[in-house]
Amino acid sequence: MTATPAIETLLPHTGRMRLIDRVVSFDDQSIVCESDSHRASDHPLAEAGVLSIVCGLEYGAQAMAIHGALLASSGLPVTGARHGLLVSASDLQWSAERLDQCAGPLVITAVSEFRSGDHVAYRFEIWASGVAVLHGRASVLLGAPIASIESALKGKIVDSFRD
Figure (cartoon, rainbow, N blue to C red):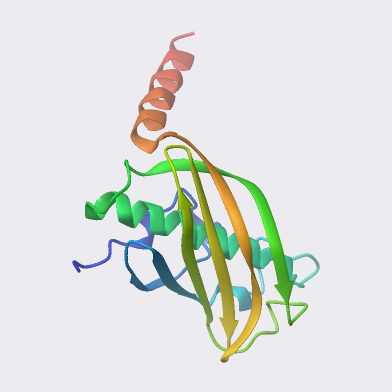
């Protein structure tokens, strides 16, 4: 497999909202990522310094998005990187209450369970220090290809300056 592109090029998230630090591996069905961001004192999803385990859903969703972008850039069977909207999460189960108290890096795995033209579904799991702290399923409704959205927005931004 070729070198993995930089995370910054794979997600629309920037700055502190880009929660995934590294892609460990991926293939056409799954991805394994790591993150150290859960222990940041200024984590953007923390409330009063507490990062709830429920925020792990965003880590899973970002791993899913990275997987889709990697597939689109690698020639594997998908139809281009696209923005998505998380439409459902199910079967969420956890063994910890807080991500910020998990030692070591988080290991996030996501396995594709379903792909169609405008919908993807994944099973995901988050591990910390060899213990599964969260797992569940998530479904995403895919929108237009990212390049189309960027082109449309660029036109709108230019048009708004003309007014």
